[in-house]
Length: 97
Image 1 (cartoon, rainbow, N blue to C red):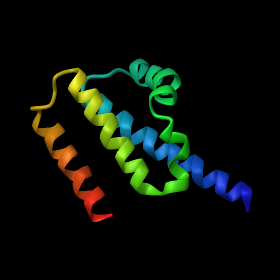
Image 2: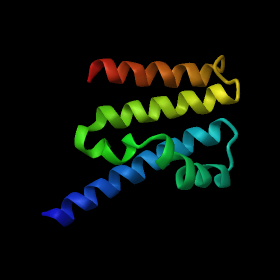
Image 3: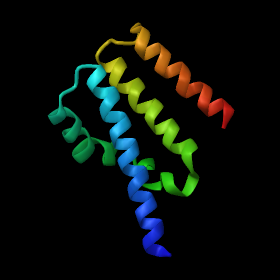
Image 4: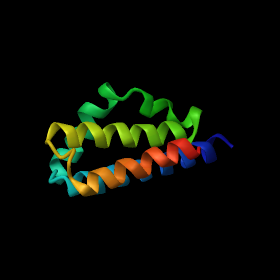
């Protein structure tokens, strides 16, 4: 049972990682930037990432939205139509959930 839960958590982590990586590439981040973020910055800046499994997908959705916001804002992409569309989509998911 514990092994199955661990496996499911790993799948969620990988899904979130891949989603954020895809979005990061849209904003011009390299694979090295993404790895650096996940290895050094994400655990420090987003401790909720490790607790996300206890609170369900809402926390994960909020993490994705917040991460996208910070990444886009730091590079001045807040007026980018793709950024706006993704942000609106994630906010709609959060309201729905």
